[in-house]
Image (cartoon, rainbow, N blue to C red; front, side, top):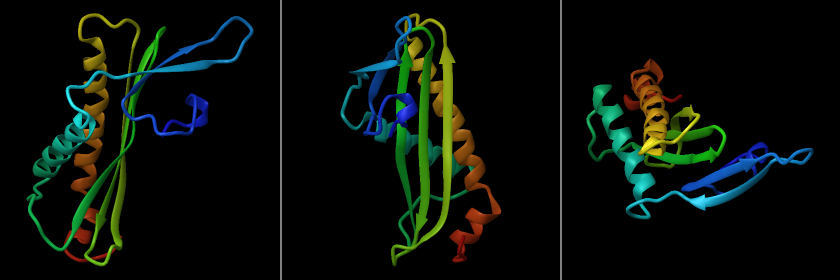
Length: 153
């Protein structure tokens, strides 16, 4: 979701927002879709980054009593003066009874002045790299490993 300070409070995953500030007027946000090869592109990208972060943290990915739920909360960019890419993913480790045993947020943002060539992709990659680094740190934390072993938060 985009906060009201960024143009609204509705789901904004997969949309580019162009912000403009007319002289002596409020900021406005006009959305247009982010081009993706499939409707699942955002989820697939976050899933791949999560599996990679888990693997680098030494966690094997397989079925079991606990489920890691990754929720994409923000995945957007605005511009046109400065293009800001934002990605926010929340992680919950849930047991078989539906109780959250562990929670973490991973955030990434990147800004560029001008988009040249595949600049939008590079901008998102920089934000996703920050998300992956934060997720990896969270998956290496003592609290995460305690939750994996059956402890609570």
